Length: 205
Image 1 (cartoon, rainbow, N blue to C red):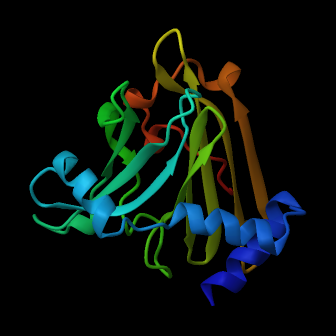
Image 2: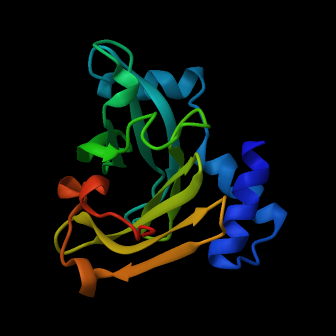
């Protein structure tokens, strides 16, 4: 059911011409779970009480190496599904080993934030050329999506938010709105200071 509504939502908001093959490719990247050998490589970066919610691998800093993005899921504490989640960027050093190059404790919306009819508001994390993107979706009376895209700065040696896309559709009356913003609208936002709660998309009256 979720897949049907998300397909309708994407068509209404963005008039996307993405093929089914592209969608499948996106989701395979966005929801990949580390295998046993990969778990060993990532375990050193996991704080107590956290597991890897998902990971994505690829070159996010344009140096030809395979880097790793990991989203952590809290498994201890009070109502962990209602707390923001940490994301860590791991880059390859000259010796080929992973090292932490960026992290943000609030980069990922909480599991249940606006996702009343789905399992998780996080739709996926995708590696892009010289950067990455984060996508969130929710479904209740309204369907909504938020996508945040980051690009690497070799001068600052970190990633900066450069594009926000999103939208909302009321399933009852068909009203909708679309958000498309660039850095001219929201300014300079390094990944470490990014907070999706502070960069909202459009809302319906």
